[in-house]
Amino acid sequence: MDERELLVLGLLMTQSQHGYQINEFIENNLGRVSDMKKATAYSILKRLDLAGYVDVSTEQEGNRPPRQIYTITASGEQRFHELLRGVLANVEHVTPSGDIGLMFIDHLKADEALALLEERLKETERLLGVFAAVPAHGHGKGVDLSISHRIALLKCDRDWLTATIQSIRGTAAQ
Image 1: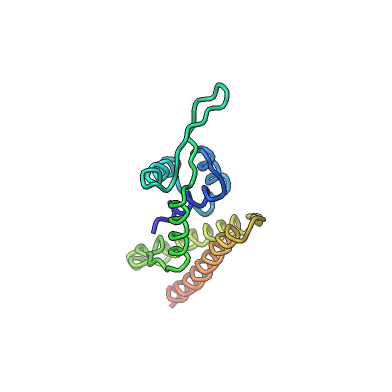
Image 2: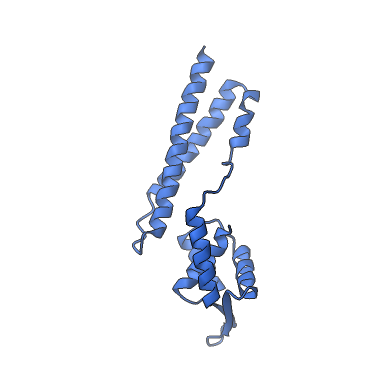
């Protein structure tokens, strides 16, 4: 399931936009929930155009260079709803970042492993602060739900790391 395609189609559901607008909106407003790069967005727009999910027209304002405007089509709206339903209903099995490293933690001395996990805990707490400081979106629930989900996951990681660090300290003390 390509959530990046869902993101681009979702942005076009509100209004026709040129690629720069889409990229600016993602970077300025959705950077905390998407790490999509500009080249990826343009690649997705091209793919959506070839599939008939968007129409592309050219617009020129004054002396500015012409730019392409993307408008979602009826089949694009159907694709958006199909992707949206799939993403909301399905659980994706992913291996969280760092889990492979945890499998081999016994190859480090306990004090080094603790220092690294404490560094990870500190970064988790920093990110938790960043997401907790995000103001309410104010237009529907969706963006706020995404941020609150990220906060819940970070709290879970924080609690797990705290318990794991305490457990390793207890084992090392014995």
